[in-house]
Length: 379
Image (cartoon, rainbow, N blue to C red; front, top):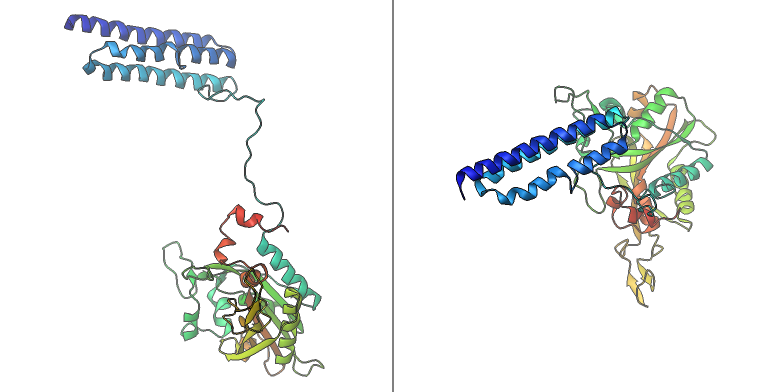
């Protein structure tokens, strides 16, 4: 092809681009409503608009000229589209004309929403609270962001105490990116609520402290870095007509478990160590699946005949909580006289109770946001 012809042809197309853009901007300036703006868009920048049609003529240009001409047309489209957006704003703002028109006669698409009702952990927590309220306990709450004094020191866990290693703590950094011994942290248990309550109250009292706690640990089917916990505390004078004893503690726990699981429950205690109680115990509960026998017979979809219980590993017992009589040093830390007062404390996981009651195999499901899982609970 003749080079002079190529040049004249390109100049002709370039003039067309400029003329079309000029005409479009003049038409846009005269537009008095959004409908006219839409017509301008379709006539010049729409799929079959004048500027778009020029792109189809690019095949008539030599290959080395196409890139420059394509850029010129696209630049013109950009100028026009920006002018259209400004014009729409000046007219009060309407949806972008590049979008497909909405057919209001079509049925609306279905969107997934949160399950109506309460989260299953909230249901379980409220049931726990209601049972304890019926036994005379009040519900106390406290901050999830705690200081080291209430989370550790006042609970007989000073800075150099090896028991601090039992709690993997999320420390909150200060603005310099560091934390100091007196820094804030995400509470590792709800026991700080008990400390705060005792600092502001005088016995006798009985409370439970439900809430979320946080521990820096690996997650698996039975462990999460965030989980729900309920702690209980009952304190009275030693010379009371009904002193708070270990027997009182076990009676309260037995009544709670039997009402929560709606069946007869047996408890077993084992000595254990917790810095804030003395003596300390671990409390086991008879298995809710095999009723403490270690075997099941034709239950949970198993074939007929006696099968080993997988829930309790055929032991007949489930580890449930730690408890004990409040340590004298805890009473001293809140200004109580341990010679005059006596009390018990206990703590167990809300997620653990929900697992046992509803057969949930993985604690990570509760906070996964999976609507399929949440929808399986009709509460």
